[in-house]
Amino acid sequence: MKHVFFSLILFLFLNTTTSAQETGEDEWGAWYMYFGTNKVSDKLSIHTEAQFRFYEVTSTFNQLLLRTGLNYHINDNAIAILGYGYINTDGTFEDIPDEENSNEHRIFQQFILKNVVGKFKFEHRYRLEQRFINTQIDDFTEHRARYRLQLTYPINEKWFLNAYDEVFINLQEPIFGQNRLYGAVGYNVQKNFNVQLGYLKNHFTGINFDRLQLGVIYNTDFRKSKP
Image 1: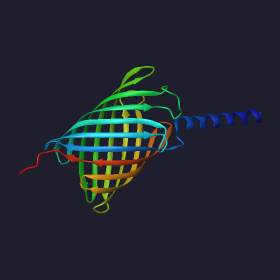
Image 2: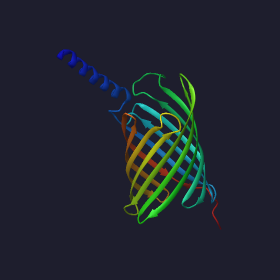
Image 3: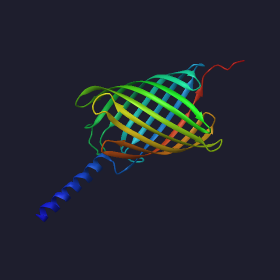
Image 4: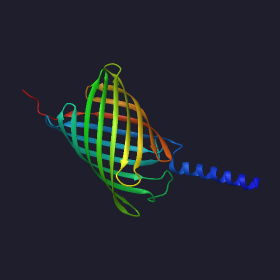
C-alpha cells in the first residue's frame, strides 16, 4: 500500500512539473513594447503600438501584438478611442509547430479618464474588445471587457514610478479572463519620450507568469505650427 501511495504522489508531482514546463510558467519571460500617441489636430491623434512577447527573456516566441486606433481628445483628461489590433500567438512553450498557433483580429473601443491627487497621477482605462480568432481547429468570436487603474508618481523631472492593475472580464464563459499587476521605474529622456523597465505578474485561473517589461513611449506632434 505504501508503494502504491508513493507511486501516486510521484505521478502527481511529475505531471504537475511537466505541465509547468509545457506552459513556461517556471520561466522568466519578457515583453518588449512601443507605444505612441501621434497628434494630427487639436482633437485627434493616432495611437501606434507594437509588442513582442517571449516565454523566456530573449527567446521562445509567445506573441506579436500590433495595435492602432483613432483617439478623440475630449479634453486634457478624457480620451475616446476606436481601434484595431492584430495578434499572432504561439500558445505553447514547447516547440510544437503550428499546433497551438492562432491569429486574431481585434476591434476595440476605449475610454480614458485622468486626474491628479497631489503629486499622484491617476488614469482609468475602460476597454471593450471584439475578438475574431482563427486557429488550426476552429474560427470563433469572443467579447471581453477590461478595466485598468494606473498610478504614476514623479520622483523628479527625469525619474518616475509607474504601477497598474488590470482585470479582464469575458462576456461569455468563463467570466474571469486574467489579471495583470505591474510596477516599473521610468526615465524621461525628453518631454515626449520616456523609457520604462518593470515587472508584470500575469495571473490566469490556476497559472501565473512572471514577465520583465521594457517599454518605450514616444509621442509625436504632426500639427502645423501656428504663426
